[in-house]
Each structure stands twice: as structure tokens, then as C-alpha cells.
Image (cartoon, rainbow, N blue to C red; front, side, top):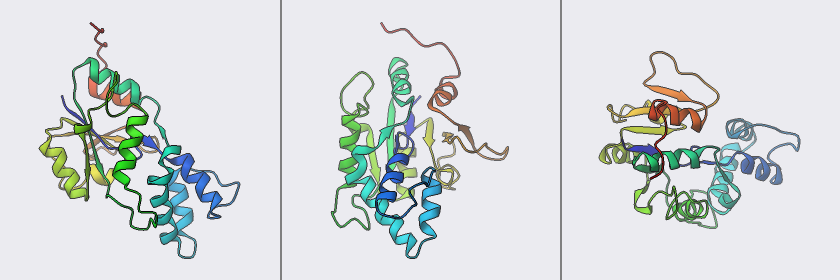
Length: 211
């Protein structure tokens, strides 16, 4: 097996960062609660809301990324893959710079630095080799990379990625989402947590022991 994983909102979660910064900038009321989707929808209703949302994203994916955190269970899943000799490949649709970020932070470098700081990339007991991390300019490039890498599985938080006509047809698709279930005609399986993803990938079989 060769498991491909998206990065933004799959490995890393920004929800609490979006909420805090949006309130600091006066884009949301102090008592507003909700995840990224609810935050985005609320901000887009404001005058010039689409531009405000894009500026917020540019800041958080760059300067604000240090405040983001790893989803629960990602480290356990990566350790399991290491035990099973299953390569992990991180494939992210991420431009080099944000479209509306005046500070011109390199988003790819910021993401890779975060991965290193959190033990996701580099060296360590479950880290992914840096050469197995890929950033692509467009969704089409991302799908082509998934195919070229020979992934057997791919985990993403975006339904539109997994249902794109260009998605490699032989790859097992896993939607990381705790807010929906898959219709019978959808080409993916929904997993609400990384524990469920581990069960889906490895079929619930017992873990191998460390030699």
C-alpha cells in the first residue's frame, strides 16, 4: 500500500485559529462559535466579505500557521503506517504565495516548517521524509501527482477533490469529515476520525509488533 494524504484541514486543523483571528479583526462577534465552514459563510456575508475571507486565509496559512495544531490521531496513524512498512505521501494543493498576503510569506515553506516542528516531516519515529511531501499549484496538478505516485489510498477533507473527474479511478478514496455520510452512489468512504481512517486502511487487523 501507498497512502496519500492531503495537508490543510486533514493533517492540520486551523479552526481555532480562524475563530480567534476573525474576532480580533472584527469580522465576527465575540460570542460567535463554529468551525471553518461556518466562519467562512459568516464572513462572506459581510460587505467585501469574499476579499476579507481571502486575506484571513492568507494570514493564517502563512504567519498564523504556528498557532494551528495537528488533528487527534494523525501521529498514531503515521506510526501504524511505519510499523506496516506502508509509505505515506503528503500531496497538497498549495500555491507558493497567498493571493492577498501583503507580507508575501512562502506558504509552502511555512507548511513544511510546521510539519518539521510537529514531527510530521523530517526525522523521527513516524515522520514522513521531506522528499515525500509535494505541493501543487492546481487541483489538476494534485490529481496528476496522486496518480504518478501510485497511491493506493488517498485521504482528503474536500468532497470536490475526491469526486473530480480527473481523480485516479483505481485509488481508494477516503473523505475525512465528521459532518456528513456518503450517499450510496459516491466513490468514497467517509471517516469522521483518524482512528476510523486507520481501520479503513488496515481493515481492522491487529497491529504488528515492533521488532
